[in-house]
Length: 639
Image (cartoon, rainbow, N blue to C red; front, top):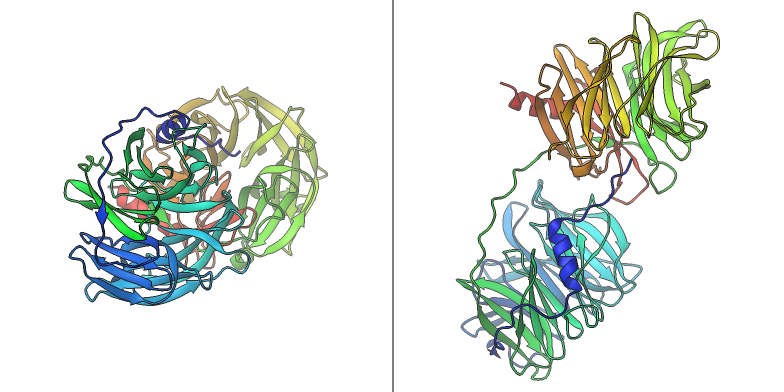
């Protein structure tokens, strides 16, 4: 089940203040002066050079990129006609730390990447990012603080936003990987990214400024930040945006030129530029206990600057970093975009582990069967299947074979399957449940029979003893309920315990025998385990038994020890594996894990559903993670 998008408190504050009229502090107008070193230029853009005081890159129409320093000297570093500058400092490329500069080449329409060597004050072209469909209107960079990858956002003439990873932070190398595209705004004037907050801001010239989440594994929802009158406090068209190192957003608007400063608490102050009517672009740089701002003034055809006393805010302590693992492979995508792929199970072929299968549900169509390399092997389109599980060895039509079960939301039934000697999956039939809306499901085998647990969105659980030795039969032997909607469940067969997720509240346990007592809650949502509590499975290895759970609300995964107190042994996210061409994982519904040694996975594999399939953008699928990565996290946390 996909979780609802929830605005952060900061975003709510920004959205509320976007609708408010003037009311922030309005200091006296700022006096400006010419920026020496860049005379006679028909300016396009200006950028404060990261890590330098009073040093700027400026553009002039057909003049190129010019380095301007506070002493008034100017030096042309690259010839051409550029606009929409951005940069990130200390980017390692082929072992050398450089300032990565990006700019739109107005002549060709390409976005050009440069390496600025600040020691030598030299600029070299690295690569060009071309667009065959529409010219870019603006562009900006984003460095993900978790893995150091640098993304390029380009907003094109149709209002589409395209995100590409252009630098692999781990390998220290340039790449060009399409990540995602989404509908942005028409008439995009500028964009800027606050790396620490993961916030992408896009200026819509006539309406205002919108905020998106910059992380690739997020939805492209937008929030208003600053709107033009009569909807908000902006007096005219939005001209440019800038982010300072403290994470503050500065918005320049026209008629007359006005700077507005936004923090997480909303609009803080408005600064008029004294006597300036034709401001066009904006750049900001921290200088001691203040800011130095620079812009191009079309009325005087000159770059100008001004100092602003503004102490840097006290930075909050950074949040503790969550460990990351990387997927090594992925399955083929399901057929259509939308909330479709849901829950996997892993069948280990006891005779030939390399022929093992990943079997996943498509809740729009049925069951998808994949080889371990992710290729689609078989598709059984028998209804809206939600969760799936299996018993490895039982009697099916007189033979010892696996028995699979899936919750079928089309018929509110339990669909049963088997796998034949050729590793082909066959539908055996369905067992009616009488539930109003079947949802989650898991299976187990004990001395008293083969069992299926199936639940309803209203909280009810039913337990069935199932047989397929001579046709499909199911006997309901037990019924109980959780307080609210459940979905994922998993059984520890050695302990005879079922673990059940209550999506909004936590995790419950109960015995698996029909005469076992009522369930009891063992873990609640706590800021690390965040609703929705979704997929879960038990890793059962030699002396290592763990419960693995997807915490959908924060796109992460937890491993709990199956001992009293249920200690949390690992907490991790799944990032993008650029070398393997596999994107990260988010909004996971179901997961499955096995400790069996498989080709490439000697200690087992974790398979998770990916709610947002990027690089490139495709319908949902399933990702495979080598369990050894997870085990290393557990070993570090275990005394």
